[in-house]
Length: 82
Image (tube, rainbow, N blue to C red):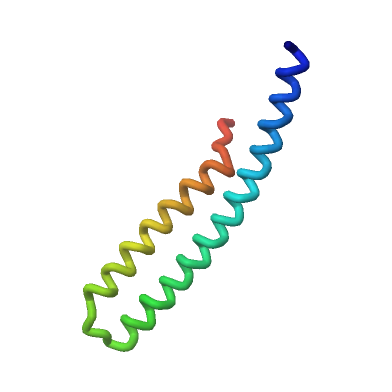
C-alpha cells in the first residue's frame, strides 16, 4: 500500500507541474490581452470616439482580465507569512 501511495504522489506532482506551466502560459496570454485592450481603449479615447458604450465595455473586459491575472498570480505565488 505504501508503494501505491508513493507512485500516486509522484503522479500528482507531475500533474502539478503541467498545471503550473499551463497556468503560466495562460497568465502570459491574459497579460497580452490586457495590454492590447489598454491600447484599444487609448486609441478610441484619443480619437475622440463618440462610442462611449464600446469604451465602457472594453474597460469592463480589461478589469475582468486584471481579476483573472491576479487570481493566477496569487495561486502561483503564495503568500509568505514572515
